[in-house]
Structure formats: structure tokens, C-alpha cells
Length: 412
Picture (cartoon, rainbow, N blue to C red):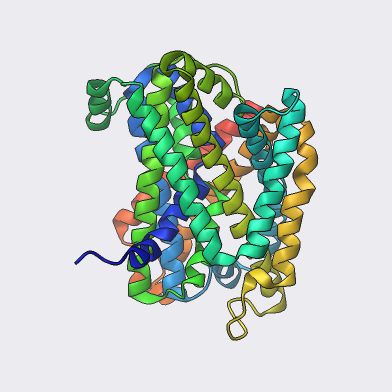
């Protein structure tokens, strides 16, 4: 007999959350422009990028299942307490920039769907609305409501974007060749690195450790469940990224920032008609609002963890204490909601640049720390990395170092 509906949802819910949080405006923009410039030949890159993020996220989960602590606690406990302050300063700047980028992207999505007055006014109104909506859902809804809303948003973004990719009738033989014989067209290196590095999130990967703590996972059984979540989440992420390359391959897209999504929607309207434009815009909205909601719910856990590390109480919960109801969690949620709102008055491109540069620092750092933490048998026992995993992490470290330095040089 198939498992009951509620049991299936319980198993799949975190996978949906991983996919919805990790896919945002950047994946839509980068994938769409890469497809427009080089066609379906780069579809394999999206799947490769999702595989790389699975490797890193699985390492984070494996540390937690082995050590019983979050990766942040592992950094401080095993790599030195000074890392706490270095990460915290970075974390504050990153939170501010990602908050501004997500609010701006949601504002742009609102402009495309239901404009209110001029473009700038509409972006501000819809940006504020989405920030407050995310705040209300997280503050009052709890983790169960969060899971259900994220599942709905995941369905919205994937059904609409994958449906659009099918409706445009892409070059199927070229897609098959791309998947089985990957190649790099001349001039595509920067776009390949952009898709590989951008898809699937950066600091938001750490939120997963707190979501699995909500599920009370540990040990081998916990790791098995985590691999299911992450496998489902990054398969969906890879397909979404590949679908964006397919969509971009049928239209001409130029520009930068989240407004590229509106230009892409207009081009799709010429190919598929008004219905095609609307379908894609709903998918874009699902992608950016689910990312905002995932950050609003998951990132405050990191702030709570930092405070507990400072007080020496990290990893401990008083009875059945709900961390989302603590003063520290709610204070940081409010900060994420309100502090970056003024960035709605900036150009979308400027906000995205700050976000991209800050994100470029994080992935090399995370890959390096996973090489250090998950290799020592004394720390993780049977969960330690084997040599193929270490080799893959070393390649990932080199890739993200190159990508991060290249991105920073481009924006200086």
C-alpha cells in the first residue's frame, strides 16, 4: 500500500523547503540569460551546480548527525572561538544585503503581476507588502504552517516554470546532447561559473541544520532522512535551473538585475501569448517569495545560535522550547523585515551586486571547514569523509574560490 498522504508530505516537506529557499531571482536571471546567449547546450550546468550544493549540504547534515551540534557550534568548538565573531560580522552584512535583495525582487515580481501606479512606486509597495507578509507568516504561523506554505510555493514555481519550458518546445535533441556530452561554447566560462555558483543558495544552507533539529533527527537514521530531503530538494533545484536555460534559449534577453525577469516574461508573451507571460510571472513570484520566506524563517535561528554560543548554552533547549518564540529569534526576524526596506529606493542592480559579492566569500569558507571538520575520526567517527568526498570537496573549494575572486574583481 502507498504511504498515507500526510506521511508522504512529512517526508518530503524539508525537500520542498530546501528547493524553495535555494532558488531565487538569481537562478531565474542567470539561467535565462545563459540560455539566451548559448542555447540549451548549458542545461547540464544547472544540474551540475545542484549536485555541488547537495555535496556541501550533505556535509553540513552529516556533521550535525555525527556530533549532535550545528555547524556553527562545530566551527566555534573545533576551529577556535574567534571564528564566531568573524562569522557574526559577515553574517550581519550578509543578512542586510540578502534582505534588501529579496524584498526588491519581490517588489519586481509584484510590478509584473499587478502594477500599482508607476514602476518605482509599485516596486516599493509590493516589496513592503511581501516583507510584512513574510514577517506575519513566520511570527504567527509556526513551523507547521511554514512547511505547508513553502510546499505550495514550491508547487507554484516548479509547475509554472517547468510548464513554460515545455510549452516553448525547446531543442530536445540539443538538450539530450548537453546532458550526455557536456561542453563549453566559446565565451561561456563566466556564465557556466555563474550558474554553478548561484544555484541552490549560500548562507541559507546553514538554515537546514535548524530545520532538521526541529525534526529531532540524529545518527544514521537521521542522516538517511537528510539525504532524502536534500536529494529531493536539489533534484528539483537542478530541474528548475535547467528549465530556465531552456526558456532563455527560445528568447532574446538582455540586461541585469531582477528586472530581467520582466523582460524575459515580455519576450515569452510574444512566443506563447499573454497566458505564457502570466504563467512565467507566477513562477517567478513563487521563486522569489519562497526565498524570502525561507530566509525570514531560517536565518534568525543562526542569530539565536550565536547568542547561545556567547552564553555557553548552544545546542541546549529547555524542555520543548520553541526557538521561534524566543525574544532573540523574533528580534532578528523584525530586523530582517524592516531594516533593509530602504533598499527599495535603490536600483535593483545595485542591491544584487552587494548580495552577490558577499555571497562569493561564503561557499569557499564552508567547503574548507567541511574538509577540516568531517575528516577527523575523533570528531565524527564513522560519519567521516571518505577520499572521494574529500576530493570532490577540494574541487568544490577550488571552484568557489575562483568564482568568488572573479565575481569580486568584476564588481570592483
